[in-house]
Picture 1 (cartoon, rainbow, N blue to C red):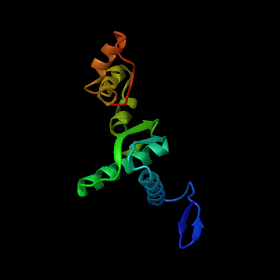
Picture 2 (cartoon, helix red, strand yellow; picture 1 turned 90 degrees about the horizontal axis):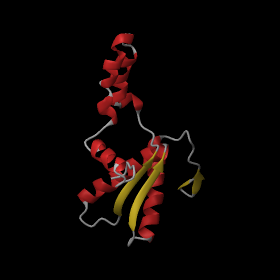
Picture 3 (cartoon, one colour; picture 1 turned 180 degrees about the vertical axis):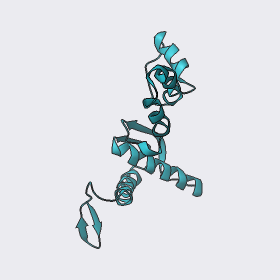
Picture 4 (cartoon, rainbow, N blue to C red; picture 1 turned 135 degrees about the horizontal axis):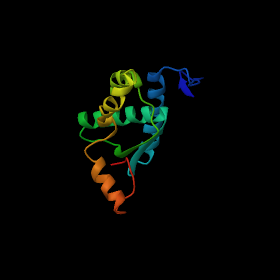
Length: 139
């Protein structure tokens, strides 16, 4: 719930994103200021991942504009984060592959591989196979 002019208004699942963002950022800022000497790691699961990402960006932007940042943001952990499919590269590249003729499907499917790999994936896989590292997506 949030307070407005001494009235308590609930934050609902149907509340606009900006309202949920403002409430969450305010609540997390209050918690951090009480413990300002500690490092901060934001964690978000599902929709909370989207929210945590936006709060992290807002903290980083405020650090750029203020030399004396009071929040020592050290990391962001996203667990099964919600994303916007409509704005993703998969939304643009996936349908043509799905609609391709059967004999072209394997070749077209290979076009999607860059969406699921990055510059670190082969090196990480090599370390995992050599039992020198555990799988991770956190840098």
